[in-house]
Image: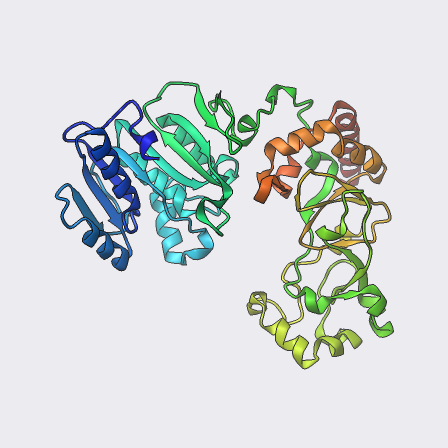
Length: 447
C-alpha cells in the first residue's frame, strides 16, 4: 500500500501525510522504511487514533521521530488540515455497533451516512475532504461499497476524486476475519475514465466506472448493454424474499418423523439451504412448528393448545425467552414475521450462499423456506416453469454472477434486492405486461 501511495510520486520536502485510525503505527512504520530505503525526504506524518492505549503505544514507538505526531482524537470530528498523502485501514463498524446519538450525529455530518452505513465509508469521506487536489489516498476496506445501495454516495464521491486502482487482496489478509478486502487508490487520476483492476487471482486489466451505478458488474466484466428488457423479476413476482428466521430453530424445527401427533396441525414441511442440492433436488426431512394461523398472524397464547405446552417446557421456554426479539414480541413468536399467505404458494427456491446460482421448484407451494433460502413467488403460477427455465439459464447465471455479493472462496451471496433487479427476457416481459394490464383493468372495474 505504501508503494501504491508513492508510485511515480515520491514524497518531497515539506509534504504532509495522514494515517487516520493509525492503531499502533504499522503504516507509519512502512512509510518510514520506504523513505529510508529509497532516500526520499520523510514527510510530516500525523497519525490519529481514538483508542488511548493504542495512541500511547504509537507515541512510544515513534518517540525519537521528530517528523511523526500521534494525536489521540476522533478522526470523524470536524477538521481542516490538508494532506498530500493519506493511507490507512479505516475501522469496519456497522451501524448496529453505534448508539442512536452517534448515528444521528453522523447522518447530519456525512453524505455517506445513509441507510445501514459502515464507519469505513465515513472515513473515506472525511479523508477525501482533507486530501489536497493533487493528493493521493490509499485505503484497505471491505469490498461491499462496490455494490451495496447504501454506498452509492461513496461511489459518487470517489469518482469525483478519481479512482486510480482497485486491488482485490486475499480473503485471509486479516486472518480469521472475513472482510473480502480491497485496496482502493484515489486521486492523481481525476478526469480519467480508466481504473486499473487487479483481481484476487492476480489477473489485471482496466475498467471504466463512470457509467455504472453498481461497480460490481463492471469489475466482473458483465456487458451491461446485453440487458434484454426494462422489466425485472420483481415485475412478475408478488414476493422475492429470504426465508423465515425463527431465532430458535432448535426448538421450532423437528425431524418430520418425530413430530408428535398432537402437533401435526402446527407443522409445515420446511427447507434450509443445505437441503437444496446441486442436483436440483430438495431433501424433505424437517418440519417447522408455527404458532401462526394460515395467513401468518401470530396466534394468541391461549389458542396454542398442545403447541403451547410443548414450547412451555422449561428448557425450551428459557431458550425462547433468551432471544433478542422477545423485547418487542411475545416470547413464542419468531424472530421474523411469517408471511404464510404469500409463502405457501407455488414458488422457486435457491440457496442463500452458493458456488453457482440455481433454482428449484416448489410446485405445490407447501414448503416453508428458512433463513438460508431465498424464494420467488410468481404473480401468475402458470409462469413458474418458464421462470425456472430462465433463472437456471446461462444468461441469468451470468447476470447473477456479475451482480451478487461475494462470499468466502468465490461463492455467491444471494440477496432479494439483487434478485428483484434481474432483467427478464422479452417473452416473460410481455407476459408480465399482460398480467399487469389485466390487474389494472380489474382494479378499475372495482372502482
